[in-house]
Length: 175
Image (cartoon, rainbow, N blue to C red; front, side):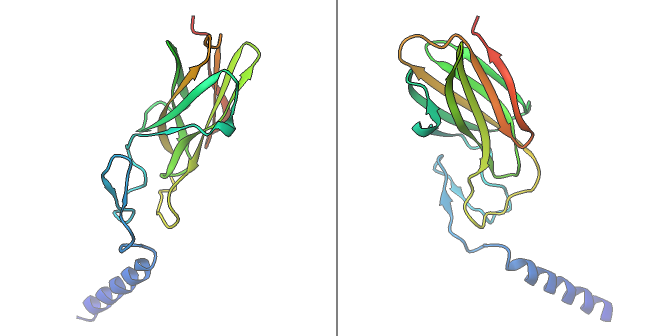
């Protein structure tokens, strides 16, 4: 009899202690897909949502680029990889390693280099304060579309600056 009461009391104390860490009554935010995101539902933010945003102009050091858009594509399988597609514009598709469950790809720099263009893609935690994120490494996909005035660059070098360090993952000349 006493054992059951002790177990129930211990469980109640443990749950009370954890309850202060969870924001179960916090606001429900709406994601870019129009679906509600509830940071208290026990899942990491974000999940496999697709979000598209303009790349800030202060990270672009090239007069030839007229538009740059980054689309985060959620989880991916081949971290540390990227591919470059030369068509009417340059499309960089890749997968990098985030430092926690809330990490998302971000463009850190786009610059002209001798013989082409260098693109640096990093990761950062863009979650709201108080959001619980797993402390495990995650793989996050992205697609970066670059539009140019005039000819496309002769080559594109893609660098990942993520939880695994800074590394050139591909250099593609489009031929």
